[in-house]
Length: 233
Ligand code: FES
Image (cartoon, rainbow, N blue to C red; front, top):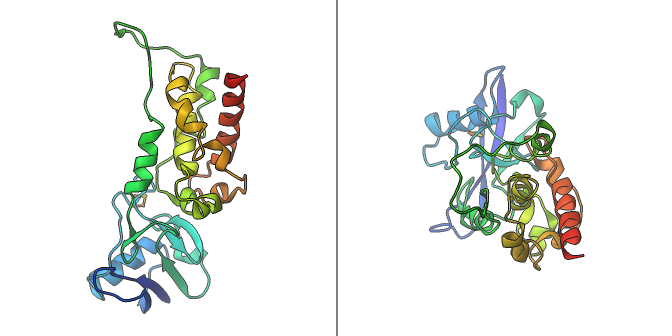
């Protein structure tokens, strides 16, 4: 079967403006968008640039916009898309080249929320910190995030103000703030309660729609807000 693929091309070092290149290729029944990109890169145009690694929806490298929706190229089946397939880089992330975007700012925001367990005991215990199954269950829907950036790229509050931490960083913040073993709310309060923190979200739910892992960053942001309010009161 033949499919037609339009691919966004842009090299900021040499190109005046982005363009789309169109390729018509022979594809297999079970091919994903990533398989199609690999076919183009390996047999038609070796300069096509995009990120990929695991091919199993785990590493988050291959997030891109496919017919206007953010998705993982390695998970999106060509058979699930009708007609011409248009592939673009994640919206509002700086284009490094073609489908590859800069992620420095995205990961810097993640660092700001201190994505690790914070404890104050001294000296540190060498015992396992136990948690009840109920407390552990609170974290479901947070730890599964693969940091692909699909949610943040689809967030209108981020488009409006790129200082906003964004849904990915805030979902990760709840993963730690909601952990009964964590003692780091105070250390994170400044950033979460700031102008770029939880209050910047307008509950538009684009992030929920965009998440390839079916997570709900908006719900995590609302829980963070409740937790901050309780803390402040
Ligand atoms: S290549 Fe790793 S998530 Fe797609």
